[in-house]
Length: 242
Image 1 (tube, rainbow, N blue to C red):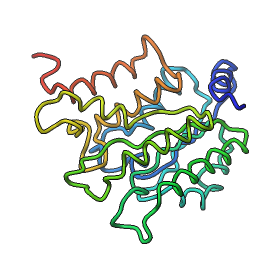
Image 2 (tube, rainbow, N blue to C red):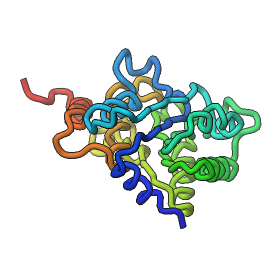
Image 3 (tube, rainbow, N blue to C red):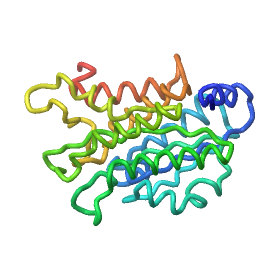
């Protein structure tokens, strides 16, 4: 059985240059909704090539706004294989789950098979796949994405079955929202710029959870300390006290 975590540890310990490819939809594309701040891939670029001192690594973002898992498979050579990656991270599902903008609607079983096929193709390249669940959304203003939780679970299921490294961003956003007061439960208001695009603070949380799950960075990292503070401000707007 493939041991992706062991492969990741060996890559990071070897000292050899690593090519990291991030792909997905508008959330990973990371335009507009951070309002000029860095998106999560930018933060991870600084963490990997700055804090971790891996200056010969390459961090490549091939995500495209509006894309889905099936579209990425159809353009796999350009989105992934062309870059000869060592590690490939996929976050997808926010567009796949809509029930209004696609005809026909994508069934969850078909989505799960696309995720599994993506994993197979990445491994066939000799690279390590890393799957991310899509973040939660504001369902009051994006009711067409009511299936987002089911699609996040499909990613978890593929990761568990095929023993893939998983970054559960959906759970991270849900945990952030817990206990935030009446009317806020389940809605990550402080992390969103609109109904389903993370804000600058949302991207800070995405980067933190990825770094934690993949094992990049650690105690004393200025990048991780800054990201932690950004998330704390989003949760408690008066933090730190004046």
